[in-house]
Amino acid sequence: MSDCLFCKIVRKEIPAKVLFEDDLALAFEDINPKAPTHVLVIPKKHLESLEEAGREDRECLGHLVMVARDLARRRGHRQSGYRTVFNTGPDAGQSVFHIHLHLLGGRQMAWPPG
Ligand code: AMP
Ligand code: ZN
Image (cartoon, rainbow, N blue to C red; front, side, top):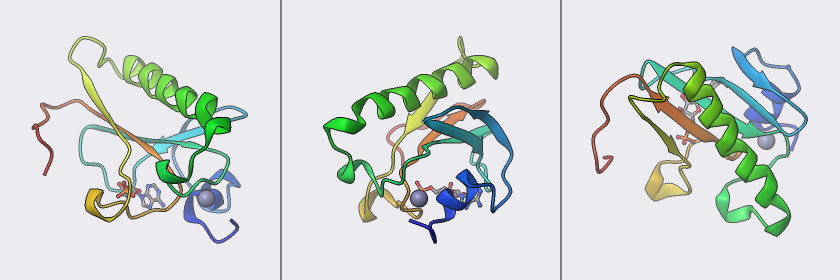
């Protein structure tokens, strides 16, 4: 989808602080960080949300989770912990409709989230 914000970041039409990239995925700093580490891990393939994902996306979605885990380790959060979140739809407050995994770390998190 050409007018999608995160597709534009994938195509380097909009700048982002990219931390990781491979054939399937891109990870970059969130523009409005909610924690000392706030990274978004996205598939290069446009998918609106988890609701749109099919069986063929399982490997890609699993890859996003492992990329987030590796970035959390790189940021030194292995022992202290971190949070990984997919916001899906209105009740979760999803605001960008290209699926993204939030990686949050570097501070104590509250549970449940607001
Ligand atoms: P969500 O509310 O789960 O859809 O999360 C969307 C996230 O994208 C928010 O945390 C925003 O701060 C972030 N965001 C929006 N625009 C950009 C951008 N151009 N570069 C990096 N992050 C962005
Ligand atoms: Zn997109």
